[in-house]
Image 1: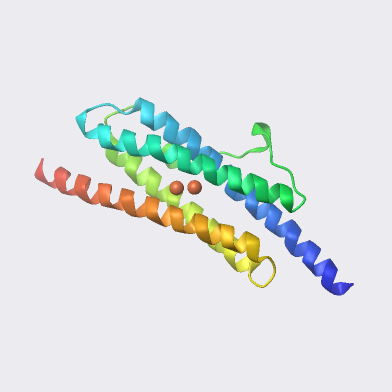
Image 2: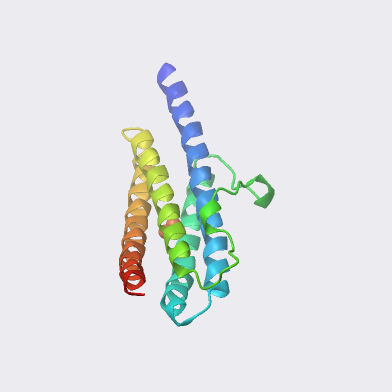
Length: 162
Ligand SMILES: [Fe+2]
Ligand SMILES: [Fe+2]
């Protein structure tokens, strides 16, 4: 009895954390969409292409999380239940400031990685299916982060030459 009560508590906690990740993924989709359209200039083109491609990836993350939330007895939240947290990825006045967007993307990827790490630890020995999902998504976010860290390297070098 005590064991099943504990399992239920872990499941509830996992659902809450999966919803947090879902929220982050959906917000990422919105802000990547925003910058993939808003950015201007020759130097923005590659970043816009990458952001457009990543929208699909983040949307598929949100879908996988949503399905797991449902399986665990939770419910996917509607838009009014979501929280906006990505202050560094808001629309900006200078639409040629690609570097600020790159930094905002890295920050968002790092926040996602941290949240998946939390789920990996919480689900350890308690829910291996959720853990496997969180491991897979964390790996994807690490790839995204790496891509944008590479972009930032190049931009920092370019800025040094101006
Ligand atoms: Fe993602
Ligand atoms: Fe990502």
